[in-house]
Length: 463
Image 1: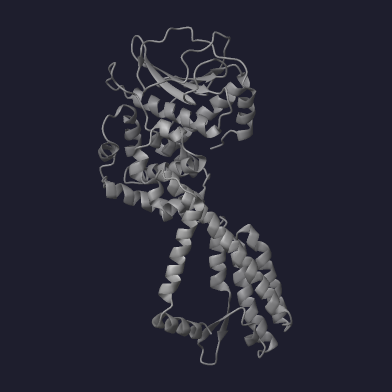
Image 2: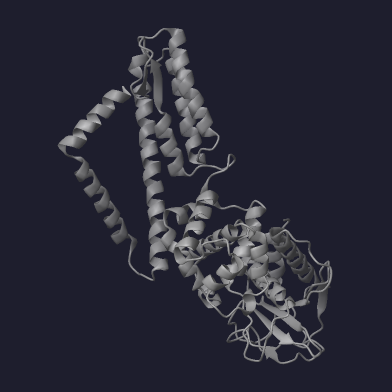
């Protein structure tokens, strides 16, 4: 999907001029959505309305340029939903979604956006999405509001039986999960978030996902919200990949905005072939996370992944007369001294090729390190061994510093996620002391007679 450039949206929202006129026709009594609205009314200023390609979306506000940009965004997201479901986007038979960009006024800023529904005389519904743009707004918030309206319209189009006490509300995990699935399909993939959830699924499990309201999401910090969105995306992706998953997802969207039962009941109804229990949902969610965290060929490894892979390849491969292969650590380069020129070149070339392969996806900070190892191998292939030990030691120290920084950055992220997810408070130093104590205890557990013997045997085998 060709999403609008963030700079265009940001520039347009930063202008923040003008207001919105109250619509000419009087809206019938609204079906409640939930407590509170973004605005209590709209100003009586001249509007400029932009209409979408199939005329489903009408965006009104003071800036015509901004209206057109938001209209294009609505069309793209709507098309993305139909593509995800494997359906053709209809040209008629839908309810119009009126998007109001509220740029001026004294209404209390309670929500960034609010979607409301009103019954029309003679049948049908009127859907309004009011977006408060009096202050800077992120593109992600605008997309979330539009996706809520898209799902709500699809449910209402199925002509549900409603009364004055009915609540029309789309769970955020549904709309945000759809939005994330569309972006994932189009190549917008932040694999790091799915790696974190794969390692620490308790940070945003399926059960906690179902409990998050719109208010909870608005109050989230940026990092926690990113994990929430990744969790919702993985769940919707896992649903769409079940047997008859697209049909089940389409049916679910046709009733989700008015469904009054538990989420598990909704899923059980529309995905009959799936084991929709607490463990069953968690399992398919975990499997989806694992798949989404697998790096692609063009992805770059993280700092710690690069270091781990580098440690695996830093060995000379020597084959003796007995045709058995021995792996010798690169720092023990003295074994090359007794070799002939051709044999030495062959041995160093094998290691050089491994380093070149690693460099294709290595963390950027490791590129100079890998290049220096390549220069060292060139010197060794020529028999020039003076100063090699010092160069290797210097590189090892640099790698140790980078790895320590990478571990600390990961620990900070894990600590932050834990404190936010469990509503705990405390300083990072205490969490760091806990990690250090665990590492120390692990080392002490390894320092016994058996471990020393095993470590000694391992050293012999690698020589």
